[in-house]
Image (cartoon, rainbow over all chains, first blue to last red; front, top):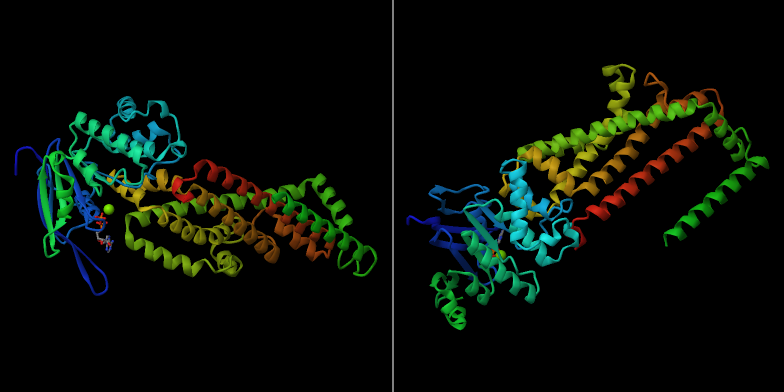
Length: 240
Length: 259
Ligand SMILES: Nc1ncnc2c1ncn2[C@@H]1O[C@H](COP(=O)(O)OP(=O)(O)O)[C@@H](O)[C@H]1O
Ligand SMILES: [Mg+2]
């Protein structure tokens, strides 16, 4: 395990069982993510990306394999690994923007002053100062997603898992958010797993890319791509 | 649309009152069997001026309110336990399904033997009639909360008490008020029927007892006064809850409910 690694996934295998069939979704997957690194993850819809994130988050137990975060095995959900949902309808309707963001900070028991300061800071970071007092039902989808992002960031976890965070947004909002999200992640030195089904997005966001692909015979196969920005989109597409 | 319904409601109430008044006045039905509406209204005004009936309404209502609050507290405690222990939920469901169809009048004799004839016995009846359906109702509302919230709360490691009190109750607030409204109607019905059938149960008589006593004296006009008051109080309570529900739905409405 490298000095710098925040997350280590070891020989992860997971399957879903219904009455008769057993469907293997993740098969012997291993990788490491360094501190401050963004690993973007791409794959066809239904290939097991969300399943993998939920296992890393501790919502699901894998059939076999280990998740190690900062040298310790991670089996149950903790604030140390924040999972950011795709669905932006995840705010508290009775709390305004700052109060939504401060909800996660309140759990850290830092004291009133510090909590408030931090909430203001993260509100500013996601550029929602103007909407500080606004309630979720008055926000656009992109703004809601920013609040949810800030709420996860504000815990200052070792790892943030983002599951197609922009999938439900329109194209122009998505472009803007991609840019600002990457900037913020880099500014904070936050370690992130970023799932996307959009190759261009994953190329832009990720320092490295993990492809949930298949080999010639259609078996599950994982590819890692360094410097995804410099790769040809069509070449990546072939791996899927 | 709403105005139209209201207007037609008023129209039919007026028609019923006219028919009621005329059949009694014209002697089609003996006034001893059905006292004319006007006489009932005059009696009602007299009773209200006298004031003792107001105290009786308040007596009944105090127990209803207390019963509602106790039921809500019990329901919240049960929700917390269900969140903490998965098995407790199955246990609770079984108990609630067995007990909720049981009319409070049916368990009245047992309650009297156990508790004696006092306000507490009345309170037990009211809580019995409210709490079981309320628990089931709220449990279902909690289950309908989208997974994103359940996962978020697990992720932030929120404890069961805080989760239920500060988040679930807020997420389902319109549902909580709806449950209170149904509970209130059930409690009101249960207290009136118990009093009206068994007479004095509490130490201070309520509206049901008023009907019981006047039936015993054969004073049909006063019985009618009691019935009209029950209708009025029920309608007013219901309207208050509906207004509260609308207010919270409008203000609180979670965006997920809109889809
Ligand atoms: N709870 C579940 N029970 C059974 N099958 C599931 C469950 N969740 C997901 N699946 C199946 O597992 C596969 C992977 O799902 P998912 O991880 O959500 O894919 P992705 O996020 O890559 O689109 C899909 O084929 C899906 O149908
Ligand atoms: Mg998914």
